[in-house]
Length: 310
Image 1 (cartoon, rainbow, N blue to C red):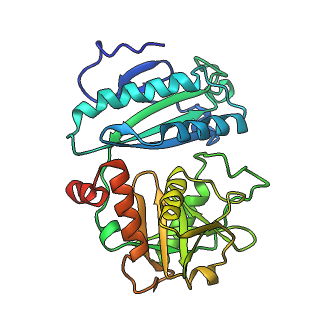
Image 2 (cartoon, rainbow, N blue to C red):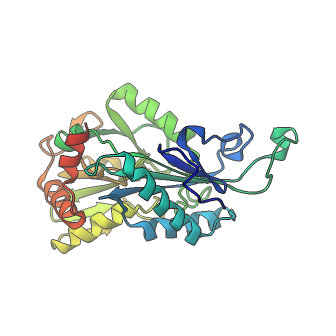
Image 3 (tube, rainbow, N blue to C red):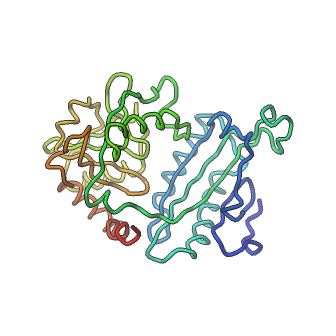
């Protein structure tokens, strides 16, 4: 594969199927199965001080997901690791030192010979793309919290797609977000499974506090998040008990605090659920302690960074 940066102009680069290209030139043919069928595995990784955070955990999940859908890209996991590090190193030079990057990685099932009418150049080879963008987060998500709404759209059950697979077939999320925002224009959708238990949002995992115990949905029904695991580790260091357990919407409504973990924002407070305040309707002490501990761990004031970039 071509990994020569010298021939590329000094603007953000992306990696696409064996080549580094200028980001604005990174394109997929309309017959790629990622577009035709939504057959796409994905990962998102953020940096702290321009270093990928928990890279190995993301790569482990990527490898599991690829195996789960029988995709075997030409690039090995080791090569993908190298490509991520090289892209971050190069693209970080175009952002301020105080700003970080989000790395988006995807692997599709490749070009379809049938849908291309015979024009597919590499039929059968999975398409691998890696790109970065400057990380910019709404500071209001930290200072005021976010809203969640539970729509009628349900989560895809494990009998159809293994929840351990991180994929980008997102039509059900699109429909869920439309429904949620009809009830609350600022809300993100929080989906229930077919049994009525809370799962996740399109971007992150939910953790709820009930007295001295915190609960987060089971990995048997919900994608286990890397940031979710970081939050669990930090919470347990403070002596709090964290359980993976099923929760109904009614049970969740009685939580004193609700947190949402994600790669980009790490952890944000949820201050409204289905149009009603969570706790006193403001970011709570569990979140304040957790975001402080997370910031100390990575050497970055996460909230301050978001405020500076807003």
